[in-house]
Image 1 (cartoon, rainbow, N blue to C red):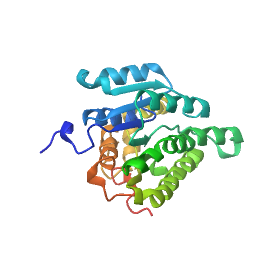
Image 2 (cartoon, helix red, strand yellow):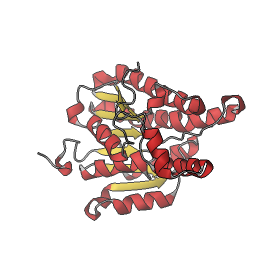
Image 3 (cartoon, rainbow, N blue to C red):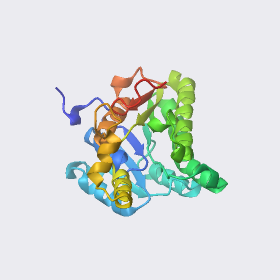
Length: 268
C-alpha cells in the first residue's frame, strides 16, 4: 500500500488551483503538495491563504505559492496568471474550483448579476485553462479538472444562475476533451453533492437562526436525501480530483463524475 506522498500524481509537476482558501480547494492544494506537486493557488482574501499555507507540513511549504486575486475580474485574473507564469512557470495541472452560489429569485435578478456570476464561475475557468493549455499540448501531458456541482444536472430554482454557470463548465470540459485528448491533455469534471464546507456552516447557521432550530438539525434534514445519510467532506471530493490529475486516470477524458454519496443515482 502506498502513502499519499508516494501517489502516482506526478512528483515535480506544477499545478494551479483556484478558490483555494478553504473547503474543496484547500483540500486539493494539500493533497497535491503532499504528492510532490508545486502548487500556485488563489483566493480573494489573504487570511484564508495564510491559514492554508500554515496547515501544510513545513517541509512542503516552499512548494506552495498563494496569491490574492478576484477571479471574477478579468484584469485581476490576468495579473494572477502572469504572476504564476513568472514565479512558478508553466503549469501542467489546472483545477478550476472557484465559484459562488448565491440564492436569489430569477424574476429579480439583473443582467449584471447574471454576468458577474458567469465571470467568476465560468470565465475564470476559461481564462486559467486557456493560459496553460498550449504548454500542456507542447509537452503532450496535461490535466484540467472542472469542479462543478450536482446542480449542473439537477438544478434548483433558487440557484438558477449558479447551476447554469456550472453546467456550462461541464460543457466546456467535454468540448476541450474531444479537441485535445489526442495531445494527451485530459479534461474532466467533478460534480460534488452536499459537502460540509465553511459555506455550508454559514448557511446552516442562518437557517437555524431564522427557524429557531439548531445547526445539527439543519444538516441532518439536508442529509436525509443522501443515500449515505451524511454530507461529504472536502477531502472526499479532493481524492477524486487527485485521481483525475494522476497517471491512473490516463484513460479518463471528458467525464463528469458525481461525488455525492449516491444522491444523483437514478438521475440522467
